Length: 261
Image 1: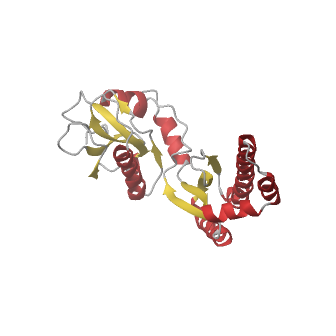
Image 2: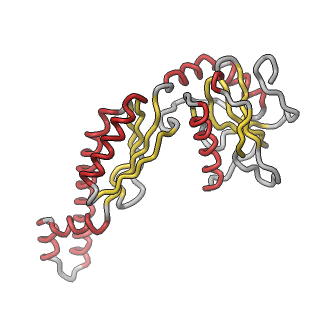
């Protein structure tokens, strides 16, 4: 590493694929893992840190291309970010998948030098926090048994004739009732977990049995209490809901930083 803290490479005219930022005190000169695969490159991509002042960028050499959004590439990106987090035991600012700086010079000047203070302050702000993801899913047989037992559903089914409109009306009633149950169950979960988090982000519902898809930014000292609350909810709701817990994670959903590259 050069005296100014910037790792010099023989491929100075290449782009730099960007995974995350961390504090320079935690920087890993070279990671013992491959990065996002470059198309038509026979060897694995090398992942390393470029350090300027208080901030380090974790990168790999890359052509200036648009990376395909597929499972292999996304997992490769996430594995690097999470490996850095678990190795440095310090704050990490993850960068959006597929971000490529046109050169090391651009990365160093545009981000690491010109915005060093901003990046360092963001990293310091996340020093005592982790992200936790919670997904709550209904157990299909149980929730439809609950629906079938509701008086309004029973009455609508008793009135059901042969007309297409009556069948449409019943379907819409079932959909509205599911929406109401989803709102009730999600609010129950949020009421228990939200007080233990610094921030909460509600993510999109992408499956019909998905009740809640949320990310929580949790203080390190509250992580054990958060875990206990999730376990208590699982015991209480386990007969009808499945809770899926992901974490601790880098703050993917709570970093608001425009790279400008």
